[in-house]
Length: 178
Image (cartoon, rainbow, N blue to C red; front, side):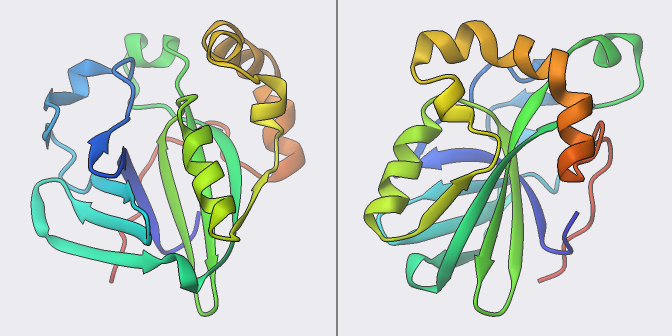
């Protein structure tokens, strides 16, 4: 995990895209995380990534596309707690490593097929997105993603995590200072 780590709800041009299948018992409503004040929003806009703390919109910063060298896309298994219910629910998130000239940022958010739209936008801005695990080749359409994404990673994640040095599972959150 990098020092610049952000767990986010994903937005595209101000429209929330985070799927509603994330554990609803964690969030008291869509705008105020219950017990997780560090959750950010990440808005993929026409000119950059805009991150803001959901509980304090004044706590924000941006990463202009012009500063991004490339982005790595991974999948990470997230465990939200240690109760029997949370141990049984497989939750797989996208994990972006955004490489800039002077720093790296790790941005984690619930996986959703619509992120392909964001990747296409980034490519149009000449930002290379390396889909390290071939997520969008393996699940090329909404139906394949919905039907097979979770079961594929449930079956194969342990091996994938070992091969790529990923948390297995990721449980904690690292404080970010900026």
